[in-house]
Image (cartoon, rainbow, N blue to C red; front, side, top):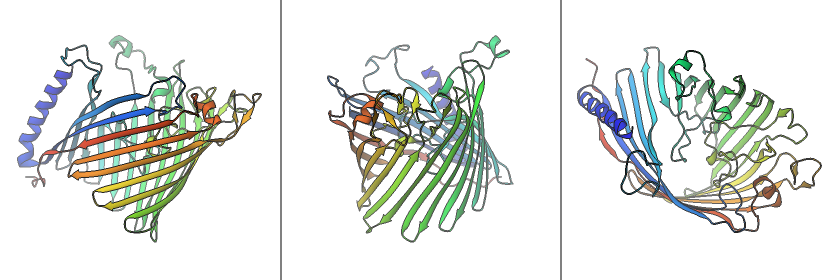
Length: 440
């Protein structure tokens, strides 16, 4: 399968290269991104007698971007693997890793400015809070969708649609059945509308997202998310604000009533030093309501690693749950950015995590109540740009947990809970035609 994919990709590249020289704009580029991690309390508190994890995971990609007249085409093939997971002497069928398609879409743009895009694509909007490409994860996130995109002057509107189905369903069954079977892991169907207006000192966006997940009895339960996002310049201050509400039903058929509020402000103290403050408030479900409704906001398809501490204790495939209910999160934080020169950057965060609802030691209201304080996390990231297309990132994070965090995550707050990583990224451009030739 991997050989066939490479053969098809190579044939397509030959065609694109032949046509690009005379008629179109074309770029062929690549990416090699290995990341080595030391995990000693990453995502959950470290426990007595456990061993830390140490490994290297690598993303390798080949990109082809093509544009001719009203046609735009993008193809991204990737391989994600843990170093050593495959034998040195490779034999088909033995691999634990695999090559797959990260993006494969084509878009036709009409004279009116309306574009029709179909295929596998990344959806990344505003600050990636709710819809993000999840680029931090080596595999990233892609959607199989149809997109209508309209742009005129400072206004942009996108409407997206998707309907998912299992690939391993036998052909006769496809005549009778549309059961998806992934439950809450992915949507069965979704539709969204994103509108954006740019101004001289910022921009404002609105999002309507309808997310349908299929339950075990084949019913599709729809949850709606409505969001507003704004980014503004107020003098020297850069301000971001956002608000989301969720309603409808989740995959367990519970009524949903949840919300998220967030803001952050950055101020340049000097040309090389910036300081910021912010807070995220993500609603959670109280134990007294958990049986009948959900008040836990779900950021669904956002790049959650970006927001709630880099150690991924919250919302990165890692709910903060007591007996099936997500308790939500209150996260005030401070941020410091140092730019000693154009090629070096240091970012530091301090997060103070709290629960917006009551915490009980056993998860039930008849067990002892606990502090709502979950812990404090320190994040440091140092970025070095070696040259065009080559950069190094070094990171260190440490979490200081509380007994309430132990109730949520298990493990021990008395153990050292830290995470260190280093990543080098190579992104060369192999071939590029600078300007598209006039259409004949």
